[in-house]
Image 1 (cartoon, one colour):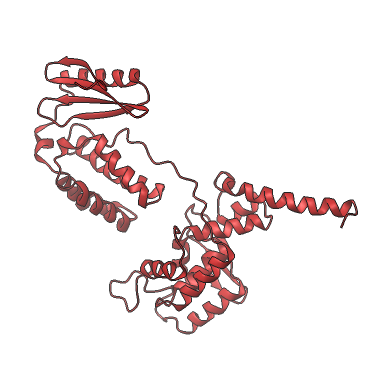
Image 2 (cartoon, rainbow, N blue to C red):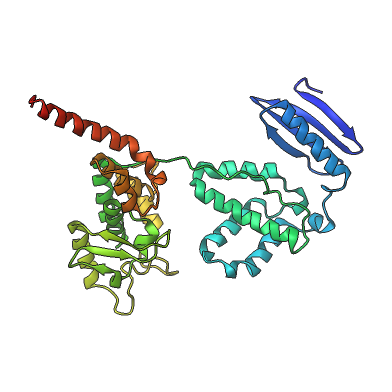
Length: 356
């Protein structure tokens, strides 16, 4: 046995070992004929305590998989979830995407062989490509399906998603400078999608979310006063967007060709048969043409908020503009407001002293 691995106990078929992996300790519990269970801990004491508790549970048959868990696959569980639970979901489109992802990744696995360590490994891979909040929704969908498999269907004896920690937001603050804004707008205008330019214009000039913009109805827009009223927002509160003159100019063009039987400002975004590219495809193409890297649509919102901060707007004003109820979500811009307020104070101070 390697010096990095130490035998802790052996009770019947259950055996626990500890391995030193970098700065952490990995506990491994093997159960005769079953896939091993893993746990990662900061100290050897924590690893030993966990390993002992798992061994005790195994000896009490608490970890022995049920016959159904040995027979049923993850695909079967998720397809049953899709049939009975998906119709109850408000966001069926994204939930379908989460289910399809898990089926592709682990659909062939038996419920009895799926471990917490596997879920964590997949979670950590997802984080590389997707926002933390999105990754958490992937995990939440799988956790809910397993909860039903354990409590209602009696297909599994345990939920491997339990104690899988949610991903903490990274506090991403990627925003565009003036030259990047100019390049992006030019690329959007030259693209094949008839609505992308106006949608990006509104996002950059108001900080509105993509769903808030694409869901706009003409009855919510008043081009004569340059205002749009968001009736459906993330926090379910009404919010008014100012429409600056360049945006009004583009919306007037769209208004002239609007469909009489469709009140949406940007119709056709979700139709199965399209005469122009999907919005996301057109957005990615525009980023490529503008040579902008590491940028998501939501970062347009950060660009607007950062510009407000650099224009010496207070955190209270930024929060109100973005539709946040508290200042916690806009604290990331405090260094920008502090810097520009300091410059403004310095200029005023020099004037007061007559040194201008």
